[in-house]
Image (cartoon, rainbow, N blue to C red):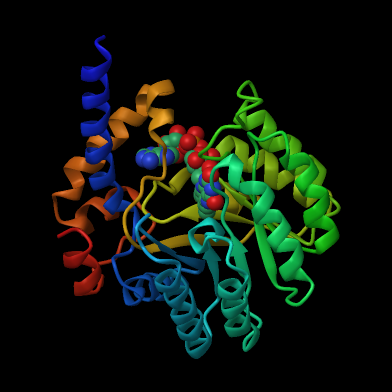
Length: 309
Ligand SMILES: Cc1cc2nc3c(=O)[nH]c(=O)nc-3n(C[C@H](O)[C@H](O)[C@H](O)COP(=O)(O)OP(=O)(O)OC[C@H]3O[C@@H](n4cnc5c(N)ncnc54)[C@H](O)[C@@H]3O)c2cc1C
């Protein structure tokens, strides 16, 4: 196809996908995330919240959102930790220290999400530096990156809480790595060694195998799920394996929990985006109650009307 037309189609598709992404956040405000977490708690689930920023948000504004989130978590004494995106802070040590100082008041876990492969070196060296002064830290290891096997060793040495994901971004040098096989290699390397492993996947077979291997090795573990994605099969696995469940609740700006590169490889993603686009324009409660983790008629007005306005 003509490359100009191709670009236009992808730009339009990306805009549509971003719109659909609003289905995966609790709402624009911290209050929206806290309401979602309270409901989750009522359903027996823990939480982790993260402010999803825009590219254009200044790092100071993002840090303020992280610090406010920590302050509210501290005041409400919830089973909930903070996830952050270090590249969004432009790797600014002063800003990261401000977040950790706030976390220190209540020893709240601060977890580093994983972004593009190129961001990993700087992220891990800052985690290693931060771990010298604050021990309650977590990192994310994508199964589709070869480097994750080495990062496991660092995570174990630093005593980090680890979340294993398939990964939204490929390994540029090792695109051949199968996300599932890579995922289980990372799990095997963590089993019997890590302080704690969160198995973050909605793929029930993968979740079951990962949790069984960790349990057999005596490694404390849980299942982590994304707000707004279908959960029934995954929850069944958590019950079978006898592990707790935690839900990642984003607030702020909608992103997609699948990248468009997945859409190119996996036609099912086109359908998901289309479906989310349709549901993004319809009342969210009916949509969520049919497939997401938060079926609740008590959704606060702010999280229903503003987030999908
Ligand atoms: C708690 C958590 C934290 C994460 N943090 C990160 C991170 O920091 N960095 C990162 O790169 N990635 C992160 N991810 C995303 C992860 O890398 C995967 O891209 C994502 O979880 C999809 O892979 P999957 O293992 O769930 O399996 P998939 O095979 O993609 O999904 C399993 C099943 O879930 C359903 N499903 C999945 N996605 C959708 C959808 N969008 N709409 C409808 N149904 C769907 C389908 O039924 C599918 O068959 C995180 C995921 C979770 C659950």
